[in-house]
Image 1 (cartoon, rainbow, N blue to C red):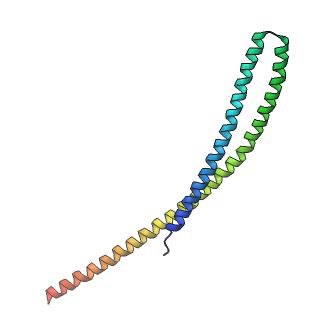
Image 2: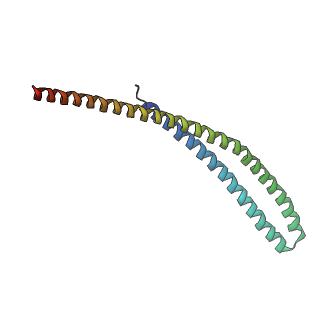
Image 3: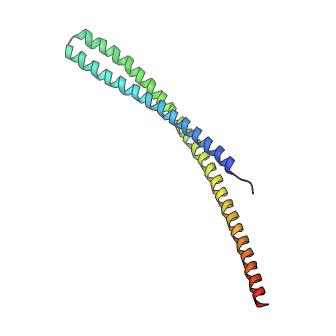
Length: 140
């Protein structure tokens, strides 16, 4: 029976690569979420300043600013939404790669067990033959 350890190492490498890709996608999504949170807190801070000033020009300027920021937030939301299918696909690919790795590991474990059982059986047969031979010699 062929040794599957090289194949197992290859499959582990593939799983690790898929994990890195998935982690990178999560990191990118988290960066986008962070930018979005920063923009929202900045808008809140600017709104408080505009309201505190009480100046109509400040409020008009804030309204224009808020419109631009909300457009930017919408773009971030679109980018985040585009990341979700990529993340789902990467998760599925990682699951498949892990499944293939596990299959190879299980097959190798079964082969190792069968080989160990075969060796043990052969040793038992040899010991039985020795025992019979010793008994036969003793009887003679």
